[in-house]
Amino acid sequence: MKVLYFSTEWCGPCRAFKPIMQTVTQELGFPVNYVNADYESELVEKYNITSVPTLVVVDPMGNAVYRNSGVVPREQLARTLASFK
Image 1 (cartoon, rainbow, N blue to C red):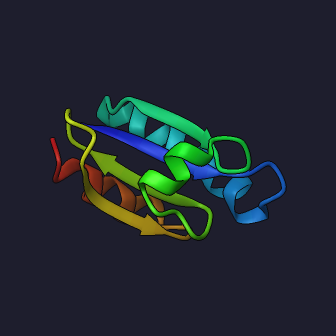
Image 2: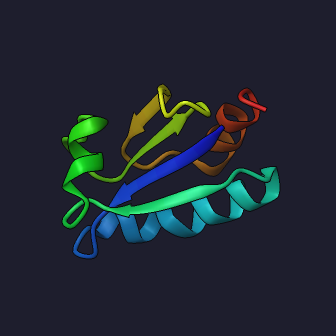
């Protein structure tokens, strides 16, 4: 499993949530691909990203198994991601 984190440079909530995402994924050992939604249109289309920040957990085949748009409290993010370990 890995996490795709869709954000943009101009998004305030994205900037606020990124350090939380980094800390939690490092603690759990999840690889993360940080995707700038302004420049990576293929991934934005593939995963139907309509707002940022959005996190998508994908299986080894690249299929989305979980997604969430918006900022998530640290504890909730940790519980959610831990359920995929």
